Image 1 (cartoon, rainbow, N blue to C red):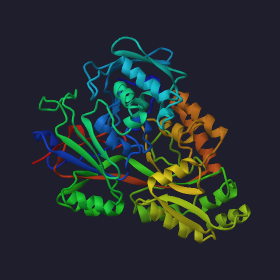
Image 2 (tube, helix red, strand yellow):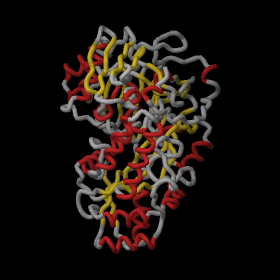
Image 3 (cartoon, one colour):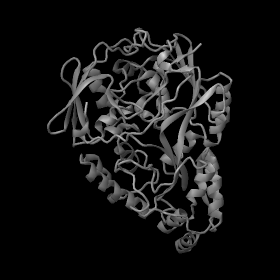
Image 4 (cartoon, rainbow, N blue to C red):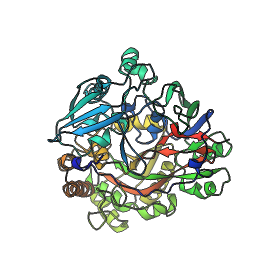
Length: 516
């Protein structure tokens, strides 16, 4: 169906389709066995709306849950749990009809009452989940008949259907949730996905087993998934992940570093898997407290950063330097000619640092993972050249998140994955008035208003004007220092057949099989 009347912008990415050990379409699927994956980050919760790592969380979530819609890796929007939808003439009501006969893992049906309950749970202020803001434009949801429900909007929205294709539109079992309670459900998920939850061993792995009553069929006419089990392990070190893959202890891994591309490409057993995404690495400066409530100091930092040098060392020419966090081609991308982007300028850096009056060390908090710790060391060296003493504090991810969410830090290295199916999915979440991930504590009405206007405007050109205004203000105020973009690639065994991915690169393992 066409989405033009909602003004949804899909950033179509030209994808290279990799041949996995010959033509997957020509091979007969093999049933049985266990798919083994490895990813960097362990989810904080297995309740989809409480995930806080966009993209990587879905490597696990996609085992157990499905959303109302899906956006494929080529940007194609399709109905998923939803059979159809209709947008009202005033564009403030969406009527969705569900596919019939879909069951949750506890045997309860996915019907209109369950779907409306999911939407209302997400927007309930008491829920206060990271993905609640994705449906901030929703007033309520109500069942119409057994398989039809309505979503009523507070205002027009350019991103509502895109949001329903991801965590905010993932359906959990109301019966399972009410029976377990919120805390227990977060560790014992019940969805409609291809695998039924078996176990979560903290800091090690999550395992799902084949859901015998899964609604989708394979090419052999039998119910998916093809494999009996799927296990995702958590390993931060890229070299260890690659060794596990080469040894046959894993079939797919995420986030291969650029320095390892050639080694993977030269292997007889594994290959690189393209992703439509880039990872933006950036420095966030907490403006709610000293020393970064000092604008001149923030500007000094921005002029101190040698973006090209960082990209060359970390991404080795595979990445790019952009004014903000998005790559070329998107609705919200602007070049250095369009907005006041910062360029490496030691003279200006020293001028603004002197003007700031700041003295003494600055502490940078960073997650213990590749390549964030390397970037921290490079920044330390660059800032030293203009007289800024940067101390590095390396933390485990959970400790880092707790510190940054409470704004209990001075500055930190972060990453953002994009592009998103619609710019608002990231802008509202990170830079809007109700942003869950306002890492710097900014209270900038000019940016907030621009983000809201861009989200509720359906005309593409008008939206672009608002994103340009927000971008310009963000750079002028120097809340962040956007460092560079680096490419995202995964790696897989050549025995893993028929790998499919969503738009933001997350794996769909239900359609995979393991070649003999």
